[in-house]
Length: 458
Image (tube, rainbow, N blue to C red):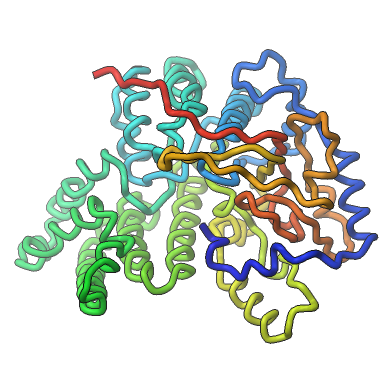
C-alpha cells in the first residue's frame, strides 16, 4: 500500500552501487544462508530452524512480515515459524494486525472449545488470512488445540480499525455500558443520544465512510467531504468530553483508556483518507505501535509475543536507508527524500523506544518468482523476476527456502550498503536492508492464497 504513494523512480532505476558494498553484502548473504528444508507446518524435524532460533535469541517480541496479503506460501512458512516459536522458544501470544477490541475483549470471552475458537477466528480476523487455505492449519487446528494444553497460544490484536463482526455487534454497547457505569453526564445529552451513539455504528459498519468512496462518487464532492469532516470533528469533540469526564475513573494503562485513543485515531484516519494517504497511513501505524506497546509492556508484560503483520508495517527503515539515485535532478532528490521521510511505519515507531528495540527481532520475507493472490480479488498476480544483481539472485538456484540473519551486518561499523531486494511488496527496491529487518526469510516460489476449506460449526 505504501509504495503506491512514493516516487517509484528511486526503486526501479539502475543502481550505481560501489563494487565493495555489493561484494560485502553478497558475501554475507551467501556465506550466512541457512537452508530451510520445508515450510510445511507439521514438518518432522526442527533442526533446519536452529539458526533462526539462535538469531532470535532472548528476544521476547518476534515480528513476522509478508510482502503482500496474498502470499499463500509465506503464510504456510509463517505458520511453521509460529509453531516453532511457541513450542521451542516459549512464545505464548500471537498478536495479529487485527481488531484490537475483538482480539482482546472478544477472544477472552469466547467459549474455550476448539470449535468455538475456530469459528471466532474465522469471523474476526481479516479475510486475507481467515479465508486463505494456507492459514487453516494455524487458525482452525493449531491455535484451538493448544487451549487444552499447559501452554496455550493466546490470540491478540493491535489494529485500531474495529472492523470485525464481534466489534460491530458488541463495541457500541460495551462503550455505552462503560459510560453509564461511571455515570457520565454526557450520556444524558441529546448530542449523545442523537449523534454520538449512531455515529459509532457508522464508523464501525460503513467502511465507505472511512475510505471516502461514497464521497468520491458524490456529484457534490466538495460538500460531501466538508460534511464528512464536520461530522468527524463533532465526533472528536464528543470524545474530548467523554475523555475528560471518564479520566478520573480510568487507570493510566487501562484497556478502556486505550480504546478511546483508538476511536480518536479512527476518526483522524477517516478525515485524512481522501486528501492525504501518507497521513492516513501514519495515523494508523502510530496507533498500532501504541497498541502493541500496551500489549507488550502492560497486558502481556514479561510474556513472549509473536507479531503477524504486513512487512510494510513492521519495517524499521528510515528515509536515509533507501537509495536515492544521485543522477536525478537535485530538486527531485529532495522531493523523494521528503516523501520517504514523511512515512513512519509501526515498526519504526515501536522500536523508537529503546526498551522495545532491545527485545524485538523483526523478520522480513522475500521471494523469487511465482504468483500472489489475495482472497479479496478474483485473479492472481504474476510476480516480477528478481533483478540481475539482487539478494534473490545471489542465492543458489536449488535453494527452495532459506533464512539469513542480518544482525552481523548491523553491528559492522562500515559505510551504508544498498542492494536490491523485494522486501516490501514484490517490487524491486534498492535499500540498506539490514536497517529494515533483523533477518530475512526467502521463498524461491510464491504461491497464491487458495479459498479456505474451513466451515464453522453452527
